[in-house]
Image (tube, rainbow, N blue to C red):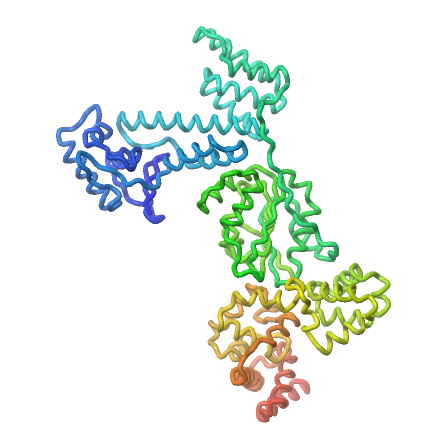
Length: 631
């Protein structure tokens, strides 16, 4: 795709790459064709545009040479037609500018502000910068008038909607540069009055009136007189449209405990925050609880989108669909069809507004980036099972990792849901529930919901069921309240090889694992193993709790162990990893440090070896453990 830019230095980009266009006269040929893209420009008119008033004798031959060189760069974009040349009707910043201005004229005030802001952002300086000749200068002056008209329209729209921040400074400079422009003078007066500077507004009227009388022999026109009357009457401009202030946040969770450090890290200043953690850990609860506590910081509105990155639906929400909903919430009637146009309009509408945008359940950074608002006055809170490194690196998002609840927080959650009396009635059962749920908020909430639904059932019965039946107790009838379903949504992001590795990790002996043991378990190289572990850590399926050591939450591990792996693969993997522990226990040089890190895993590997009848491995592990414990 070829894009020709005229609103600044004349440039062209081909499939995103800058094209070499040659010297000024040659660029002038392209500009002379681009302003009439899609229409044939006769040779004589091209020659006048490039050289008038001093046309060289060999102008036609030189023109042909310039076009030939441009075609070497732009290809068939430039074509010869009878009597002239034509540039294929494609994408130019001038065409885009005019389309946006035309749409703005047909739009409501709030949308008009966004469209005109986007249109004016296309300008990179004076049009046709650096091109020589009378035609270039005349075209530059004409395009400058189009730019001024758009700037004036934007100011009018901002005045009518009360979005006047920064206007006084802009219009002060513009009024000084155009002292007899009555439209600018009227805008400046209204901006001054909106800022509470009524006396200055009336004084400016008198200055402009005196200059008009002295230099033009005329009194101010109707627009300027109307502005004076508005200021004198203390009125605002008529026909102002109300600014849409969306309030889309869902209710905050009724039971919220702990997370004091994370709430503090979300802070009190605008920015982008990426909350990451496994499914069911409470990312959305944290975002909503913080948002509801800070509503006063976002007087211009709060937006909420469930991006369905990890959900029962077939696919995550496309960015263009999310943008359509956001623009609807901001009062946009006619939404652009193109993703980039929607994103640009959204940025334009949110710049300088103090808004909160909660992007819940995001799939990846690519889904989020088009949804980021403009300027630096908005706050964005993203929740995802992924850690979103691209959002952090390229867009300055601050990472907030969410882990499981501590035991006192787990107890507080159960107390809040079940009542203090029921929790204190059977402290031993509550202790067991806390240990078996291991701080997993979703698991605790599912148990609390079941207990509330069966108030006659003692908590000891729930603890017994969890002890004997395991994770199946936490699988309710509804997908959102079923631990297996919630965890399984993350697994759709894994390839078959990664899913096999995840299932094997659920069966590995011991509570954690190092990279070397994982490589033996998977039957892969060290590099491929690191990539697999990093992938699972990125999806919050495991955590690196010490340097080079990985751990799964007990309930995630139980879910992994339930996944189907054929017997031959499973036995071979266990034999490899148990053999690794046996060999390394005998051969390692830094024995004490290694044994301390692997002691629990060695005991578990020994139990596997004995149960499987791998007598040699069991004997080696027993001897190594006895030697270590004796020392």
